Amino acid sequence: MPTVVMQNSLKERGIRLTRQRRILLDLIDKSGRHLDADTLCQMAQKKDPKLNRVTVYRTLKLLKMSGLIDELDLMHVGGDQHYYETRLKQEHAHLVCLRCGKVEEFFGEPLQKMRKQIESNLGFQIVSARTEMGGYCPDCQSVRAQEANPEVLPEEVGQ
Image (cartoon, rainbow, N blue to C red; front, top):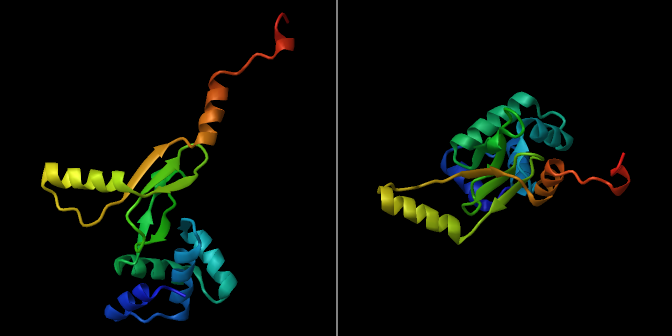
């Protein structure tokens, strides 16, 4: 079930929390991963087979306009797909592996420090921030290093 904060936010905007909206909010909030609309639709249809793609897209748009979810592109690693997460999380950055597509969330003081520095240096009042950084996870760094420096096997020497 969506959190009380989400429910109250919808109620304040005069938006009914239908069964279908509740299912989608719950999936986004509790899945533990960033879901694209197609995956979200498939998961939602397992809970309610009547829930169709049009309803999913309309609900995502409504939840986004209501400020309850964020739409992310995650460095476009998955092509043109967009991913969704609830906005109720603590502000964080997304670290996206450009090779395998793994997404890590980064929380903490360095982000707050960067935000304060931007506000101070540029006089810009930040009310919302979304940070994405692309690079290579530890596993992919190892694979890339091996690809760049393939070892010569001893039996291959002298052939």
